[in-house]
Length: 366
Image 1 (tube, rainbow, N blue to C red):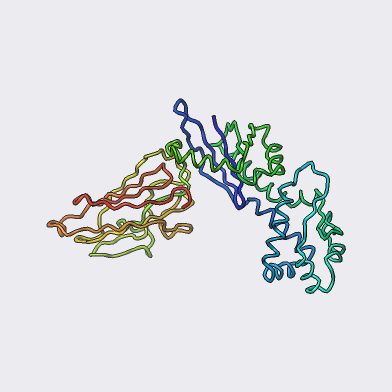
Image 2 (image 1 turned 45 degrees about the vertical axis):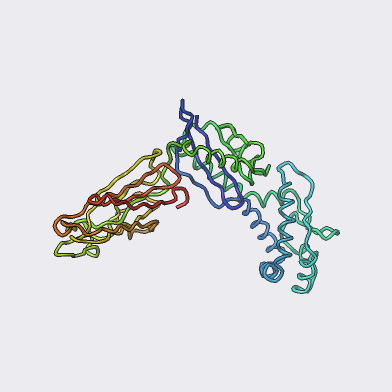
């Protein structure tokens, strides 16, 4: 069985796709984890934009700077109403405006809040005599739509990937998944394609999952590499193949600098414990130290570490103690990367002395 987990939080939405491997019951990641900045904060930003339309952006920015505590109170009041928003709701929602907002607006603009609302082009928002913004359900729905549409679009794009065909279940979890607005939109968009499951206590589901994963981290047997990983090396310079600006002459030999030696490609399947190994030699005889820089990129067509989008994500320093034949024979250095866990374990070993240096790169967030 294949399923997709849509974790909707405050700032981001994160998507993962797994297949349950039988008979072990372990999990195989079918597509690299993806997501975007489509969390519930997007609704807050839409509310702020609405306030800017009504009261002017200049005033709102000044108020946020001069009265930060009152601004927080206003957003807390909006948060309470945001949680009660529902697709079928017909009655209005009242949002308390702090007295300091009303007073500050009168001093700043020379007229009151009610006048601003009357002159505003924003529909479905009026002034209540109790000192509140009175929003219709249509106005609240409009605030949700941009964020919800981005979430639905992202899920749809992921489901159209060839690797993700045959999804049976969609689990909607995370704090933002408590919103009936989001629940309704996801069910409407995908209930005919797969079964949409919204667990009880959706906000706690991620925490429970983290605890279970901590008890058995080997449950995910196969992951997808989120990035392309490799190391920067020197190779023999080949006329016509390598650019002239990469030419380095050392001890009478021509080398090409900045070569990206790839260990794993983006979105490549890596099983728990998979090891990729390479052998290298120091650039010159008698070298007493070797530095291996580890690089990553979001694309798989990387040739040089200077290519756009390539960045350094780790370094290994290996001291090479002096030995009798160090001036005669080139030392062999074995570099390896172990994949499949939540971090990449990188090691470099001096074959002559068996000295090993280790490092780790966060596999999930790097």
